[in-house]
Image 1 (tube, rainbow, N blue to C red):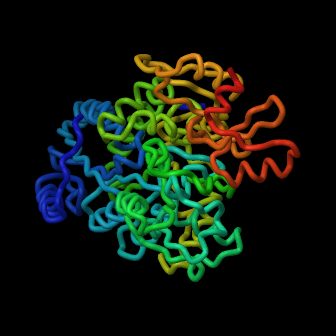
Image 2 (cartoon, rainbow, N blue to C red):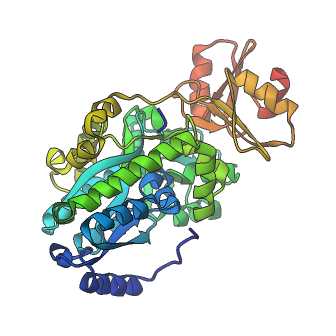
Length: 457
């Protein structure tokens, strides 16, 4: 199941002034939410470039579904609603603004969600996880990449190297777990650089970072631009990763109809994305200035991310496994995940259909080609069939996507590592995965993308 213009950068001072003014004039965004004002501003924090949150952020904003729902609600209760969208690079500042009472609803990844829960409880501003945006049950939303010309061939090669990540993010969690599985100590065997994604990308390009561990959409973006290659596919951990929606508990209690309106809008945005994946990718690309091809890698039909608001048990179980990782990094103490997760409002909105949503499973990634000038993609039964089509349409291919033969992680066909085993051609996200396959298949060998195209055609 696949279910306006870019916002001008706001300075911290201006953001604080706006939030303070909003809390004085309106009925949400602060302690004044307990009042019964007739003009209410709802403040939503989101991450435009974290495209796994688009159904609660970038896409939702561009579609205007939340504003539509609030307009209808306003006619029923005699209140004029306004939505203020605040765009951030990571989840940390959203949590800071939520615990200050200045953001009502926010979206972020699983590790930041836990920090959100911990900070909210600590500061007397408890929050609740009320829905999911996008997820991957194997963990493929996080990837470790290196420079294209890097000689690093495996995680073991990172020993003694500088690795950029955002500490406290899901990508940092992937890095820590992956290094531990590889027999390395994340605190001693690498030099970790705590950087925002854009800074880390620049550090990788400048050579001050040997590798970059980041979340969607940075690894796919850098690979598409030819600025990085994948070293480690997060799906190798086989542990779910996801992003979700968190709300201040006091806001949810004081404005339940507004929260319901947001969740209805998110459900509609999810449906729109699943029914119009190419158009949705282009909308997100227009709003974020990300390449539509990179957006589609994650958010397209059969993409790396599955979009479904339901709070699935597998995701809650994974969240509980994340707590010890953050605790060991001294970023949180104990987090009561069960009290943090509250899908009651979502059940209320879905009604009897919620059980079906919980049971829904993601579709496997497929082989797809996006041609120039077309508003749809073409699907193929095998990587070889895709390669044959690409070879016959040289110069017209906007992007071609293939699933990793082991993990199923979607990747760009021209950035994949190809292995030929007799007449069979298999793509892999990383060279290490290709090597592991070759070890199990005597006679198999890696071939270049050009050779794979020639063999297929």
